[in-house]
Length: 315
Image (cartoon, rainbow, N blue to C red; front, side):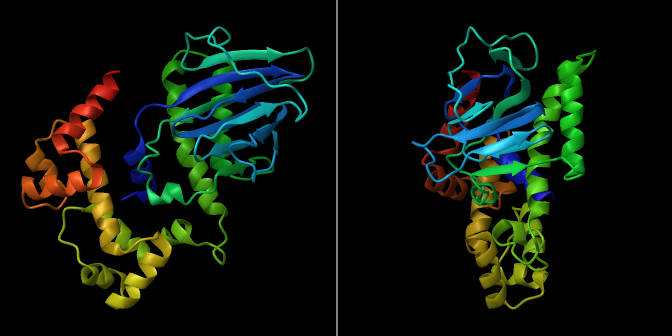
C-alpha cells in the first residue's frame, strides 16, 4: 500500500484549481487564503513569495527562480511579486481568462517577464491526515542543478504543454498538476536527512513502524491488536507502542480508528456501497456499531454524511 497516495486521496475533495500567471515588472499579485493547499511553479523568470504579516508574521519572504516549486500546506494568504516593494493587486474575475484547463491572468508593466502556474489543491483541512498536518507550513523546492530530477521533469513537461498546447493537452495538463502534489511531497521526504528525520518523515522509513502502517492501510477491516502489529514489527508490545506513538503522533489503536473512519468517509463520498458493506470494509461487525463510531467521529450519522457530501459535490 502506498501510504502517501492513500493519505492524500483521503483528503481530496475535488480537482486542483489552477491559473497561469504572466507578470511583467513591476507587478504584484495579492492572493487571499484558499481552502486546501496552495502551490506555485515558476516556469520562467524570477519573483518573490511574501507571506502576509497578518496571517504568518513568523514566515520570511522567499526569492524564487525558474524551476522552483512552492507548496503552502494551509493555503494561507500571500503575495507574489517581482520585488518585495512592488504594489500588489487582487486579481478580479475580469482579469482571468477561461477556456482552457487552467485560467490565465496577465498584469504589470513592460519590464522583465515571469511566468508561473499558481493554484490550489482541494484538501479537507477540517480533518487533515497527520502526515499532512506535520508538513512545514511552506515547502520550497528548487529543482535547478540536478536537484529532484523527477519533480524537475514534471515541471518541464508542464511548462512545455502550457507553452505549446497540442492535441491531448486538455487531458495532460490536469493530470500533471494532479501528479505534481505527489512529486512535491516525495521530494520533501527525500530531503529529510536520516539523522534528523522525525514524525512521519521517519515513520515511513522506519523498519518497525512502516510495516505496521502498511498493514493497517492494506486491510483496515482486520481485527488488528497492538500485539499483532508489534509482531509484524518484530518488537515487544510496549516497545512497539512507544515507537509508533513517538513517530506517528498517536497510539496504534487511535491511528487504526482514524484510518477506518477516514476510509469509511471516503467510501460514503465516492461510492454507493450499502452501509453494511462500508461497515464490514472498515472492521465493524454490525451497521449499528459502525454508525455509532462514525457519528462519534464526524458528528453525523453515515447516511447524513453521505447526503451532505453529495449535496456539496453537486453545488
